[in-house]
Image (cartoon, rainbow, N blue to C red; front, side, top):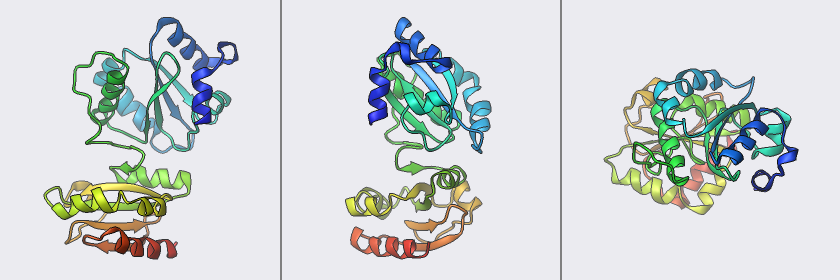
Length: 251
């Protein structure tokens, strides 16, 4: 939060380089900024750039933003942006240097456009689509929606992976996601896990051999994909904590 405050109140004369140019232009022209943060060690940065940010629909949608690319290890990125532990990360920033949205991890064009629209809505800009990322909070603070980028995130940040496989038609799946996984003690215990949510029988789940007979089922995995524990079925918070502690004991 301290670095966000620095970004908001940063004196103009302290800025330098491409990030400086973008922020100065934003202030002068009253336009928001989209900052794409990459790194040399990032496995998905080139893919994000080529398949998502270079997509014609995405480029058209971000015309309202001043776009700039920065390496997370550059001095300016460390000094003027919030701490960026994972790349790729995209910051949507207002002309007053306030961070509006932070998008972590690789996204396809459709999911990324959801965040663009949401940012434009928060900034009071017109958008062609209804801005709603609440029901599809891809790469939000908690959930990832693909295992590969979640494992990449875990490797970069020293975390483990929790894969939650649910069935949209199952009331028990909804109950566990809305109640058990929202429990304060459970969330605290899983702070060092990257959360992934998959649908039962989805292509993503099948690709990784996650074909549980019951949904919900939770797989606790290391960042390298090796299994720590499997919790099959619905569990209330107290019972689920037993599985969490068991999985952590296997690390």
